[in-house]
Length: 328
Picture 1 (tube, rainbow, N blue to C red):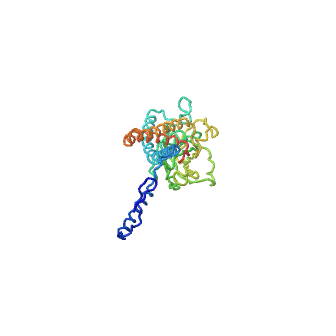
Picture 2 (tube, rainbow, N blue to C red; picture 1 turned 60 degrees about the vertical axis):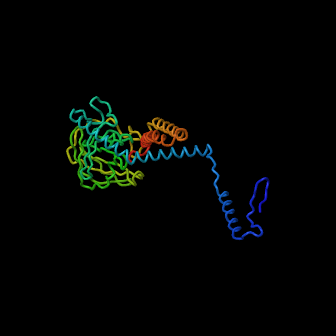
Picture 3 (tube, rainbow, N blue to C red; picture 1 turned 120 degrees about the vertical axis):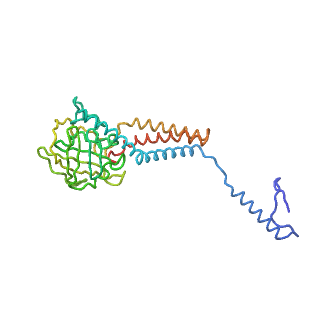
């Protein structure tokens, strides 16, 4: 039985009189299945410009987060190792030439430039051998252990302060809490070698060490405490000078001379322009990758833009690391 509805031929699934009921039943079932499949077919709606923009923004954020993660966990460790090899050669050369810094100023009377290698720290109990640089901002502590500029050099009388990261960029002071009382270590500067003995550890709220008298010397090693990459306080390890105090000149810098970025858990905001430039280049590269994806091809886009986005994300990650606490 057939019927015409608005010019279209329509097959009525009901069986005709005198027909085989089983054949009619199978036909009706087949018709119902075809109708259900047609109704279940999804309708593809192209994404709107707003959805495309949102997808692009999420992709860019993902690239930045991935680049920052790779930079902190992997690349920073490699960067620290290569930088330390270079700094060690520079410091050894300066010792041989007699040009290593002997205090807060150089032989011309100018302040020692941040990042200048000025000491070598050796802690046998931790298997630590590290070249120490001048300065304690995030940028200097990317290279290794930093010397707080307003304190005397290790080996001199008074309290000298060295700061190091707990996790990123080598995490040189990550095991500092394992150093037990009575352990000894040495620090070598242009004035000679000084030996220290650990006297204890302290955190926020703990009483400070006793005041120094005469030519006594102390070295305070400072790092972050808490979960890796999520510090919640500062750990300080004090060690007394057991060798003879080395001579020192009158100090030029004092605590009030330091910026907030040089203090424990401080962040460096001096290069926000560099961060802005990296972000702009990353946005342009991401837009180019999206254009290439639709106009050029997926394979070609991966080959060309993946290395570019990777390098830019790492550079952006390094700029972001400057904004993070310097002891992480």
